[in-house]
Length: 536
Image 1: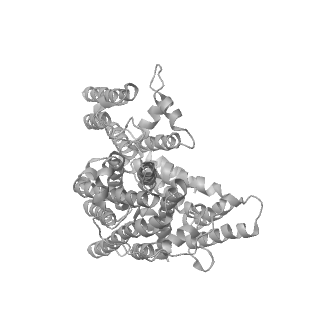
Image 2: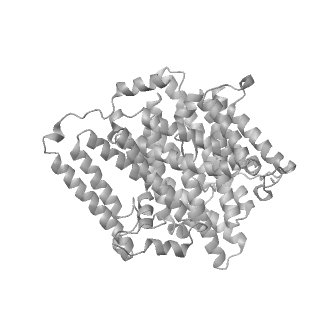
Image 3: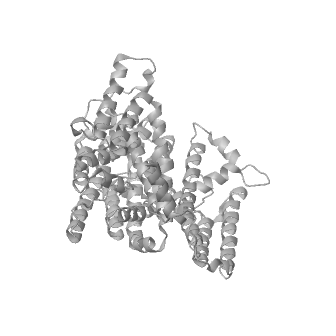
């Protein structure tokens, strides 16, 4: 039953990402649905098939090596932030620009597909290279930085954003959410041991379509989309078509690179997350698998990168082992080729799929606090803040909310301090890497290792100077700071300077008597445990 629950959770999680990808392009940019379903989906889902089968094999191998029959396979699927981000910031704008240059809709769509393929190939190559330093990063960076940065993603992006979809169709969404909380969080079995995720998706989908037929008050006609009864069959075939898109894709590389870095850092973090849950996977092998899955998907037409999911402990808690990743890989991979995945995407509303992401978010945030030293709790919280800034920045960067002309005025506004909107955007750019480094330097400060703390601050200063973190560009581009406008140029110079000043201060304070005293427990572990028992 655990593998069955895990299968429905991981499978519908991937379906949700494919739904976001298709919805953004088709509804947001009027992209031809046929190209999305027959060109983009097959290669994208092939990467998921490859990655999940490899992770399944790794789980069997780890179980045999350790003698532990309760090993849970690392879940792999489409990366949510970059799937949405690439669609909004690369594929959509490229399609619009090509049409404006005089290309027909069909030619513009095909060229956009080639640009997406090229972007995935370049991301895959970069991830292969970065995989060889992943294990070293895991050993060096404090767990508060690794898990805290992911907790921010879980809280703000994976958890909060789907709530908007849930309450966009509140009756349907809340019924699905309630059933998942009932079975997966509260741990109460449904009658006949019916899998909670399956029951939530089926009931929510039925209600969604029935509400349209019966027409109750509150179900506006414009919220309903009638599914197209058509399977889009197409086999993913390795192709050199991505070469056609390499040159135009270079324009979007500064946007794509941070997404590659984020999934590598995320892969390191999720491996650590699995390790504290009891499954000691090799970090390099986890990273190489996601890199080759992304590269394979790109060569075969994919436009979204694969990565290990940060919900491993959640699937372990469900009782899932290795079967759920194998089933998911086969179902999603074949579905992209045979076309039934595109039919499911159009059949199930996002309000029904979104609760899966909310549950995963709850597990991620909870684990970050439970598996870090109690004295590092402030560092975990501090590592969450950059993701909250990113959540705000997404709203500012959405043209329907803040028109582009207004945004330009807000980020160039002259005053006694830096423009507030520009600061928020800069704080949010590179949010996972920023959160990891923030959590790490504060954890080392708490540990009284001030010289190591200063090293993290110097790294932040260097990365800030070139826009790898805290980019002053709304598109999160990297840059040479002197090429920026006068106002934007203040971000790399002033942010970088502030990190350097703090680094020097920490280094000097490392020679004081107080810095050599043992680190106190800010919160007593015993008291925390007693309080939990009292509330239980």
